[in-house]
Image (spheres, rainbow, N blue to C red):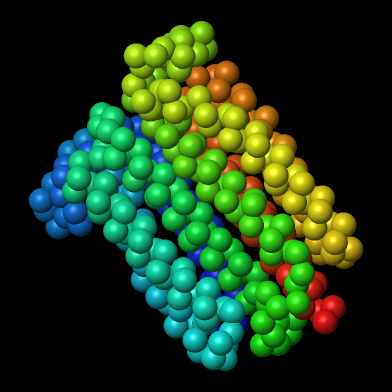
Length: 308
């Protein structure tokens, strides 16, 4: 079943597009484009959009709705092409589970009316969970696409056995990415609901003791992001030293480059007062950083397996 190889890579790319479009729905204020109705749009199954907001939201629902059947196809292919207990099978099932969670979170956002100008902490919490689940989904899809191309290196051997400190080195990076994703979601929501006209105005908003909680929490994101960048750079250098192999070196170099680029772009986004296109690019780079971390972990594990 050779089709599963390009299909798994295509799933990563398509899911990334859906994530970015979902962020555009929030940034453009189109989350209430279909009203408080789900899965129908404004109470109609076949709805003709009457506004640009409805068109944006409906497009997101259609594209995200296609993800679930595509993941089911991926699970089918994994179970047909790989043996019982194979990591590809397990990752395909995990991808399906996290995709279902994505759909349920999306439904909750609409039905609970956590859209438009809703500035509740419930919305912030749901957004944080949403981004963490997105990372988990993209992590499963990315590592699945990696391992589906390397069955010989895997050979049915447990990946985490005999790997020493390698998995424990990756874990702080994973947790740090969860933290930066959650705080980033809160910061993006604050930028959307309480836009600043100047940088000084934005800083004043964050420091105002009477400011909305979202604004006070927004200030933590740059601090968490810088700490996360340091952790990821350390992981890249450490794994390069532990696994002296070109495959790991390339993956570590990719991670280091995208982390540095993301930090630079993040500060540019802050100075530019987070326009929509920069918010989306910032999110795209965050996902690429996460993908690079997953590829580095997979390559280090693969070399560990081959050296047994």
